[in-house]
Image (cartoon, rainbow, N blue to C red; front, side, top):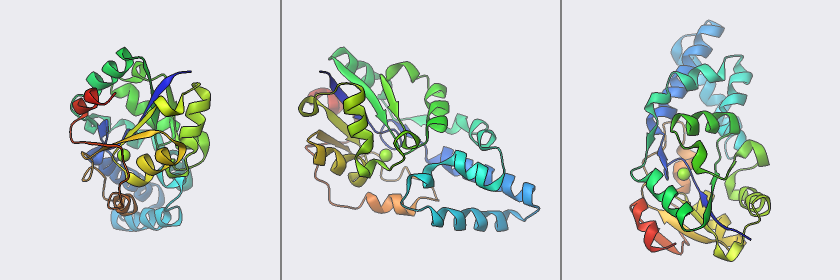
Length: 223
Ligand SMILES: [Mg+2]
């Protein structure tokens, strides 16, 4: 059996606040053009649509959003990828974990097509043994399916594995429920974009983590 570290992406390894902000604006511009609306009308239409999928994995599904409005989801991602920022020491800590015998598994509420674009752009595709996206398990991480799927797919040893993330509801609680140890990163509180008030809510919930860190390098003292 293998020791696994389940890594959250947004707000833990990557700062996507600027990127997601820009992606939403690009989508809204494309919706306006496609439908002959003003930009403000398109913004309202997109926000109204997002309300209908709030608290589901489809809220994160830019591919589905593009299909819903008949616009090219990939265009709005690709023209903005230069706004993706890695959190300091992200590659260093992934490499360190690997050297200590851990399998790095990325677990994300993003959908596979989008996260793969972003991970490739960041040059980190080879850093992960596996990526588990919300579109793979048709669930939010809060439901625990990302972790159970990862443990069985990678033959993981629950008691020797960790979840690392910045969101108590999505990263910490479901991991604790399954018997994983949880490392809470207090780096990401303001790293969500303007369409994500319900995700920001998650950040204010009670935190039942085994460890708390403010810098990714501190993980070296834990694993
Ligand atoms: Mg996060």
